[in-house]
Amino acid sequence: MSDITKAIQALCDEKGLTYDAVMETIEAALAAAYRKDFGNKQQNIKVKFDPATGNMQAWDVKTVVPDIAEDVLEKAQDELMARREKAREEGRELTEEETADLPRFNPKTEMMLSQAKEVKKKAEVGEVLEISLEIPHEFGRMAAQTAKQVIIQKIREAERAVVFGDFKGQEGTLILGTVQRVEGRKVLIDLGKITGIMPSDQMIFNEHYRPGARMKFFVVKVEMTARGPEIILSRAATGMVREVFRQEIPEVASGVIQIKGVARDAGFRSKVAVATDDSSIDPIGSCIGQRGSRINTVIEELGGEKIDVIQYDEDAAGYVTHALSPAKVVSVELNDAERTATVTVAPEQFSIAIGRSGQNVRLASELTGWKINVVQLGGETAPSAAEAAAEEPAEPKVAPEIAAVEEKAE
Image (tube, rainbow, N blue to C red; front, top):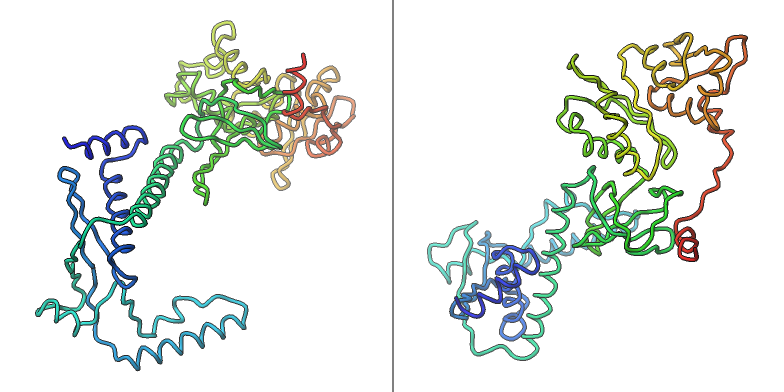
């Protein structure tokens, strides 16, 4: 194995790239260097490099097209300019459909048939010709610098593509990361190969994000931007509750128990509706575990957030009844047209059904998809979930960056 081959393999191992991807990068860099020293702008240069010997070959690659008269091309160019000007006056960009009827010829990648026959007598339209090029001598300093810049750029692009592919497949799942630092209204999370971003609206405000802390995060989305892959993370997403249940409860992971719905007030309380087709399994008991061992692990992963595990019911009245747990319901009246549910409870259950600042009834409404109105025996009506949300006093929340400073001061 030559020194060059060993160097390429070492680069592959370090950057997590394939051998073919690195070879493609090297050949693209050599093509750029050739164009710099020996070629011209009208050449479509292809290079083949042999790492075992260090030798290279170069070709000018052209696609054969029909002959087009020079005056026809000039008229087409004038017409193209006129159409572009008209589109600009109309405040828009010219579309490809509007120029499809105009003759085109790209001297860099195409060669007219008559000229192609001088290179190869039996050349045909549509054929791709590879015209061998001479390499007069070694590349100069500027060409070498050009090759270096191309390699750096291409390797960086290849790295970004690999990272994007790795994380794109993890959208909607949990990932372990280390809090790097708080920067403005976002927290930067070290994910190993890349730094993820957790915006302020994806944070749990009663959590402290101390630099160096290892936590689980929900991958909201992965996008490729001009600066490379961008990974948006969350601790407040509803999907995080689902994923923690899947990780910590084997029956949920296997699909024996299905999560039918989740309603979450991040950092405070979540309601999770579960069901199973296996009559021998108690879905709620399986999620809670012996002496609460399983649900306590889930609560710990969610930073102490309270979890209500309820039985899903195909019957809407039954589902609403379960969703208002821990309150005991006397009766439920449904209005299918308006999709509202009027729930009657005993006086001592009234405040439990509503919950602090209307939290219980609000989450139950979100979970079931029904607007729930709670009425106690005797006639008093509680505000609906929407009204409770509107009247809810603002929770005293501390921004994570401030919390981090306070924690450090302590």
